[in-house]
Image (tube, rainbow, N blue to C red):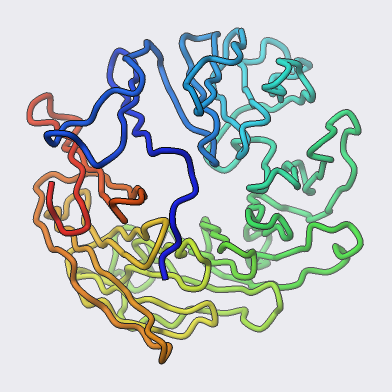
Length: 407
């Protein structure tokens, strides 16, 4: 059964070369969206995870925070030489990274949005995809932590003046992922070293329960990993990537999908039914099932339950991306990059007898499709936003598609 949206009225953030604007979400009048906020000059803009705040970088040093209930600016921060910035999930904190002028300068600053005060500072040499944001929060901001050398440091998320309140020692840890809802566990990746295999371990966030990992999985031929928690923090999907495919079947190396649970009942491979790379894997928003696109083209797609049992085969096609809609049981398969741009929307129903039934909602072929995401409103269960090749300066478009495949 689908759950009605309880989030604020849908708004679509549109970034252009000279700034951003906000559109009202569907349904549209005369197939055209109305403006919620006129175009505002900026270099970047992003919502907080819960949609309550909007962060707008207006120049190299000025960051504005907007309240999404009325889209009025509530705070402005002047941060010289700022290179990266992000909001905490509930919009309570702004985190900024500045170019350091000396090794002693604390160039990562955590600001409280309500007061504009700096609540914590630290030094970080640079930022990468795996190291930013420096301080990570659970979705309810009950847990906050950061990665340091050979350890994960925990803070009191409501009072950073206490400093570090707990340290979880993990020698060699290079990547970590905090579970979001709730923030009860943390996953840590340790790369291969001196002949020892790489590993992913899961620890409880509670200090009294951190003496031993609750789950562990080791890997050989592991160059990098992608860690993905489900809603409920009971399961972790681990995509293990190797730069070299020893079978010489793929130029891009090989990848394997592993699954670990916090109760220790599963620590192993997800058995996929076709050889080839893992293109994409996504948890449903309920956290009860996940979908995988995998295998050499044409790729195969399968839905699994949280016990790692296959529930439904979605067939094969030129796909490398899969997305769930935030509410309900609607799934979209699409192909990007050098794929032809096919997009299929499927409705998955669970009747009283507790088995899955699949209905094809629409099937479209879109040339030069490069991205999509799902949006939720009371009148449209799922829409896909798509735009065309950004390298070309002609024929660039943004479209919204309803669940029946109508523009």
